Image (cartoon, rainbow, N blue to C red; front, side):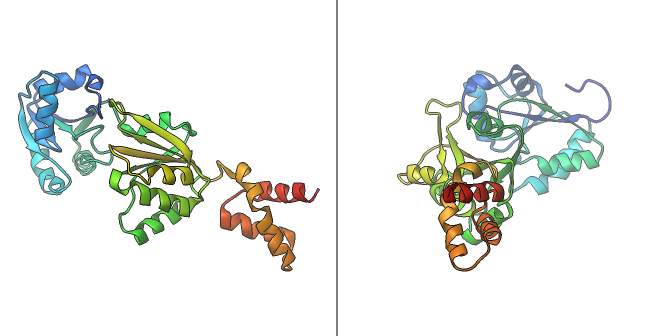
Length: 282
């Protein structure tokens, strides 16, 4: 806590994404001592505090996506006056697909101190449990709701080779998975993680086509979707497109050009597809 003259600091604190046992001792300390607490939902924060058996002593300030811009100068002013400001979202780390980024951006520009209390986050948790490569990944958050905008965003990610992590609402999961299958191909590997750290935690792994079928009856809970990057399934898929290459060759196209056209269209490795065609001819 700030005990010396001068500006205070902004503290981003991660809250549990499900299991209350994941609340860190530092989170508890800050909740009970911070003079100011900016919360995405003040009622949910008080519910969390009650469940943890503690009392939030500081002044509660509502800070969510609809008022973030209007509140920034007020909050920065309070910090300049020497107050420490604790920032929490409903679950996980603030500023990661939650309010906080614009505040941090403004604080950094103003030369104010920003630190964090690490803790739970659905992004690395879902990634670690997915069974997909974790050495390089990108977090894409929520896709646009409108089909056209969503298709455009996915087209931009068509050649992304890193593992991708998305968030999605349960009632929009099936159409989202269908859009992923259309954009990346039905055989792209993926995982759907729901209710992470909670009693009914589930991680469903398979191809996008299999996950579309699984989700057709409806899925409940908080959702994170992890998708393999481009090229991850290429060796296994290449043989499936030999017939398409042969059809182009039969139509008069050179083998090299036919392989290139099909590989680009189906987003598979040219080298693997060419080898598959030669194997089929042997």
